[in-house]
Image 1 (tube, rainbow, N blue to C red):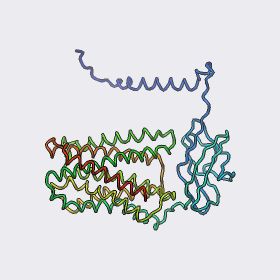
Image 2 (tube, rainbow, N blue to C red):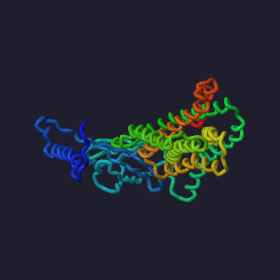
Image 3 (spheres, helix red, strand yellow):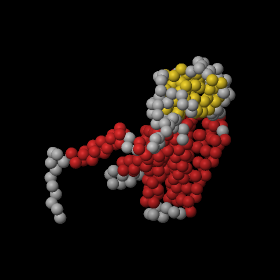
Image 4 (cartoon, one colour):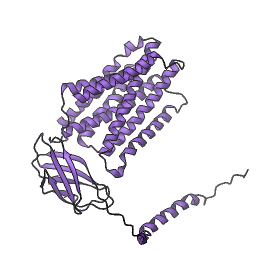
Length: 389
């Protein structure tokens, strides 16, 4: 066995030297072009992504991002088949991942679809569709309050109503509590799939350079590991109020993503706000409140704890509606949904572990299976009502 050597003040050079040599070789490769004798040249690639669409009385404004390997110059723009004048801020070619606002003084028609085609200097074309033209929301106190109320309706209110089941849950016996905990796992399993699906869908609309699809999976993995390590930092699994707090946090991140989708949809005119839609979301989130209350039935809880749990689970929906309506970006939304998915997975693991502890390992029973299946069925049914609305 070789004796350990004490580090010297020059030892760190051996950690830096390999990276320095690698950077030097990469720089040499890029400057000397050693592949030139092979006759291999990479064609310049252009790509353009539209991240935001704003419609007002002045016309159409579009936030675009260049996503190719070469600078991109927008030469012409067609709107509904006709070439139209435009201004670009900032002007000039767009380098990789640079953004610009395109302003089109086009008389758009409310309720109709409009098709926009970007033509670059090299002749490449990129298309963007406005499915339903409606005036984009402005940052006014009345509009901000309206979106906040929408977030409260679909977030805080139903979760708070679900927490009102707490006195009834305290009367349940062991089999009943086992059923409710399994029901909670079913609710969370549906939320996990739904959150990942929404995140991956948003990732498709982000610039390719952001690699938003793997970003969703990596964010979910990292958030799961971070929250799991934080929850077990004392060597014990969370119970009671601690477990309920994790439940509220995970559900809150899901509601943040739900708020993002709602705000972006209403801002783009792709959804109509009606009583049936509000009822559908309320039913969908009501069951989440029941799940948060389930771990509290055998522990003393004060009113302030319920207020905090309702705020933690529901208020992110308000933040989501604001962000979706006024500052939506597909890559950031996909990242947040990935983080939310990881948080939900961590809560599923903790609830499952709690269920196993409270049943002495006999958690796989008819009552547990029935509760899990009912949780999935309830969430699927309420989500179906939301989509129909």
